[in-house]
Image (tube, rainbow, N blue to C red; front, side):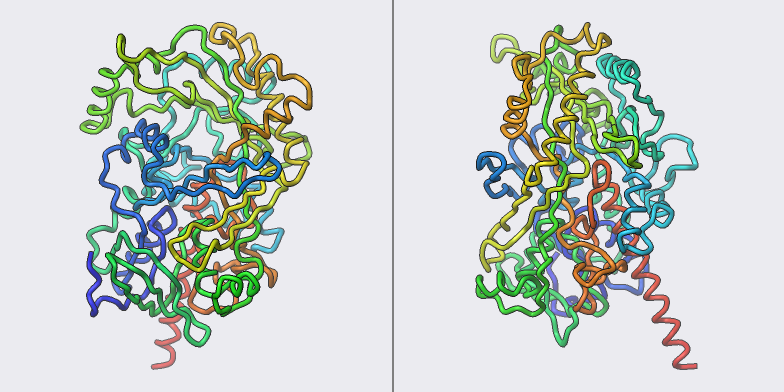
Length: 550
């Protein structure tokens, strides 16, 4: 789309075409009186790999449609940098993620409200979670008519039933649906897959609104700054196809660029810690020290096993079979390439007194280096499987800061993994629990040997060293523009940026702390709630105008 001079004025300007941006574009453009534009730095999601569930392997290995971010060297990890993948394409990270669909627990949202986020209790947010999803089962406790199709894992690998037997033997509940609020338990994974195809935000929310004449979508658009006049956000300045363009917002600028790029854009616009801004030659507009702080993520490590006999997924990875499966998935949405080799999620508490889980277990029925093979050309990989314990509520806090005043420079991302010593101790307990499950008799028929940490890694010191050497992100960054009722919070509970009128944020950056699981369903809920808040305020303004003229 080329933005003509007479189309540069919009009611709502949405920055970021990922999860939140696509939700906002859909909901706000439903009012045909509103002119809406969605701005995305990446391109369109035409590539078939973005719709085929098994395509994630190639997307990740080549870091396709990714910003290419890495962390700053991590002091607690011996200076190691961590890959920090985020989607750069229409649909954002929903176009390249693992498609796991996990609601936050009720206790997460009730904690938010207790800590100053009025109106964000579990009771308040539940309607927006239901509004977003289209659950395949007949259960009125779940959303049935939303844009995003959600299905249970259809993997027939007997390994996953053995894992459930191991969980039962260890005393964990086996859940029919872990998204109904249980604090502990194991159950079949739920994925944002429907009809054998990925349910990215662009192919669900945005696709439903694509024919609306009052919605414009501009890809390849890099926003350089928010335009602020007399204390109000009036639009954005961007570069598109080498041209500088100003887009005006009559009602609001809505930031949905994610936990890394939203604080970066605020700082480039002069909103942030004045000392840091001045060091980069940026004139401070609003001194807000907390912009970019409070970064949180879910760290995890992998407990991996060699499989005694190759599983069905390994058989399907033979090149000729894989090629046929990918073509079949693309054309019909059926076949092995529509099924991911990760069939379970598990949740566990470290103390009975807590009302939310502390550890999430992510399962994978194939080794990380699984890839195509063919007899006589490339041998089959040694088959394996793994369980990854992830720490859900780390005490460590990191930051996102500017590397320079150039909009093209990546931000400096410091997740500060294991910065708080309590985190490594708690995740170590998750590793112990994972190894205990992995050694269960229920898995004897599948387990040849433990690969990582390895049978020789038993002492506390060796386990610590293993964790520092291998810990990785679960790709759930959040919290860098914290919501709250206090003056240090970047946004108030209506998601309005404090100190700047006409500017709101509706992405993972506003989360005050992490929810107990994958965050995408929560980000979708946040954007749904933001759209509702804007619609409510618009109704109030119209009613005021009617009263003023009566």
